[in-house]
Image (cartoon, rainbow, N blue to C red; front, side, top):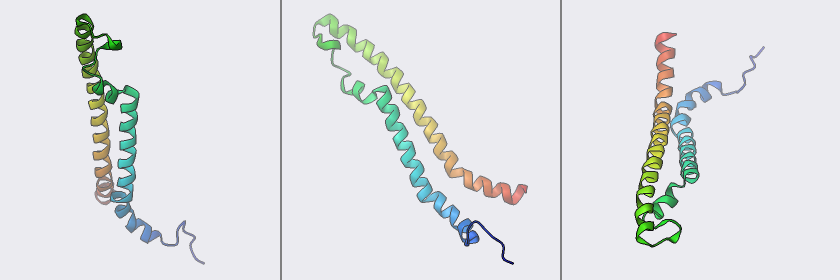
Length: 113
């Protein structure tokens, strides 16, 4: 009587998993990170803010309009930049976790179990 495995090539799948993890899996993960960063950029309007940084609010080209708009946009820019930097650091941390997760699991299986 033969054992019924989910896959006929279970050993081959187990041996192929690390190759997939660092090739196709990593590629998919990096695509996901890129889409998330684009989404955060879209939600915060960072690109639009950078393009309009030195333009006055509502097209008010008077001296007072320019004096008000530049400091406000610089403060807004600094806030959004810090927020984007935090998201970038979060995604960088997730990337490092992705890279180190498989060696950690192998180490845990070999030395702890």
